[in-house]
Length: 414
Picture 1 (spheres, rainbow, N blue to C red):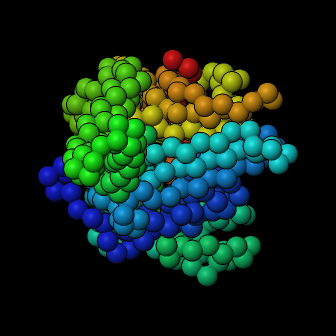
Picture 2 (cartoon, one colour; picture 1 turned 30 degrees about the vertical axis):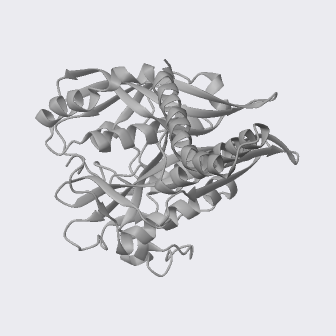
């Protein structure tokens, strides 16, 4: 577990294909409400909520995710972690996001942000896929095994690609990228050189210099272009550092979190916690009524959050405090997001900081394949969809989400 800084490798085979397919399908999931067959059920549910939010506001959005690498299909494997059953790997790729928001055919907002896309892909450790695990049909709620759904739901006939269940994408987020790929550096320097070269030749013409000066200026423009371009990059990096100054206080959160949490449960990882936290925050924000969510136990959200139509991770998640109380642990976080708002007057971008408090039990091991859309009732053993029911529809007992996952007990603007 942890970042493999000295063992970075390219992703290949089935994993790389699914990572690329997920990136290619994500825009349609947000814009058109299409599902991604091998995406985690919680991602699918969150994306549906986001699409419904956009449609409910009468907006249309073009969401184009494109690769910035010379080899657009190249994903790099980073950190990884596993328990007895599943292994997850964070993979990344340099990309850009073009967003164009329209209402009644008129553009209200557009941007093009350079980013790095991080996707977590999860597979079974043993290679034996859980064909006999119970699964809840998302259409009619019927319960069967994964294998039983291979040819469609035996009750309502709904078909879905359960053969693609593993490996599957279990989390994703974008980070703004102040750096450049080699292709972008070459293109940027070429433009800088051409501009410098033209300026040099104009000076030669103005001062009526000979061919020797032309040659000298041509050579000199190479070095001058380097100087100007390097100066531009330094200024850009400084501006990015100033804009991110508030995030510096989160630098020690990884070590602080893992030092405390690994004493409670050895398989805990900061990457997994970050992915779950971001997913729970986004699902709560995009929900029509957060009080109906099984995992949300806090006060009503700020009404301004109902104007959020897109939110991407801002690159920092800080642990403000970790508190242990008996069999429970409570973590208060400070989460940075890049947020797109849409109200009656305008669509606008804002860097936003949220304060999120999360709670879960510590005496039960982490289940990396847990999903709120497929819960097994501890009282009667039945499986049901917790996005639609807080109580088991079979025995009526309330399901305590902290048994298997983090509960979001507070979410507010920081």
